[in-house]
Length: 170
Picture 1: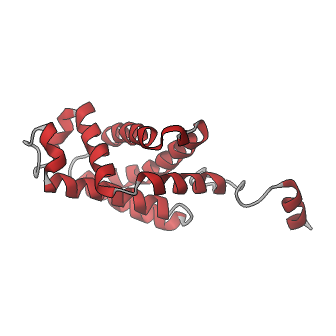
Picture 2: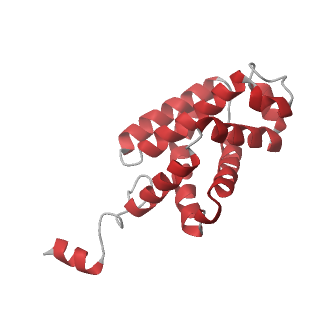
Picture 3: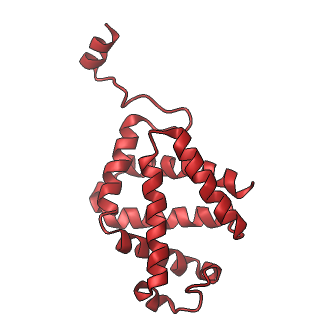
């Protein structure tokens, strides 16, 4: 009977909120559908994120030996920079794909945090990256970047960072 009422009143698993991520099924679908748009060009999207990151926080470029001395304007054509940019998109892909599997999400992101922690990266640097990711999403999605989209992405990145930060501190 409850299923019938849900169909009548429009309630479904889309309204259920995962206690670990804080995301509803509807928000997960929104993040996944907007990510499908933003990630169509992984190299271009990664370059936009990493270029924006170094424009806003130029001191962070020194952490990347493969392109630490490359002028910002030359980074998009640098293959090592492109490779790292794609790895950022790959990490975001893994995160978005694992939103419905919290155990996999946690394992993937804790490991990512551990790798970055060994290189001396900090939670603050990840928080700075979040600002840039949100800016790139806003620019890429245009009018599809609604208030609801922004809130879903904020929750997604916050949930991801909870696990990354565990890895950073281990």
